[in-house]
Length: 116
Image (cartoon, rainbow, N blue to C red; front, top):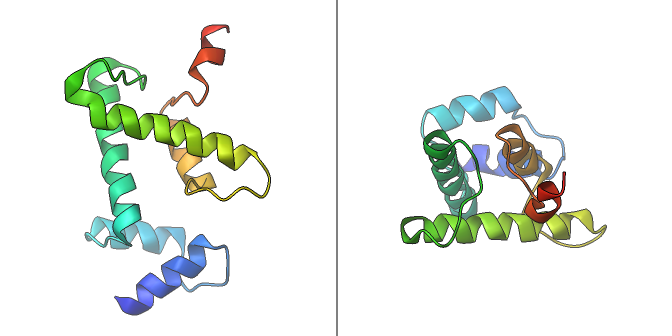
């Protein structure tokens, strides 16, 4: 497991690695968690998927107390995305995470989306 985690880190940094996306997915299906940040992000992402299934959208409002933690996470993803857009700015969001959020209809700029 230590070797897989080291290879996973290399893969995430776009460095040569023995892991492929297919292998990563298979390991995750077996319950492998790559680290606390990865595990936490995946937990909230799954919550967002469930929210979307229930409500038909990803616009989580902090006004609903039962979704306050998810709403904060959603806001943080938007903030991290804005940082990601600035070249050379350090951020915890990755292209992969942006792709996952895009694939479910996540809106990174909700105010701009209202005008469209």
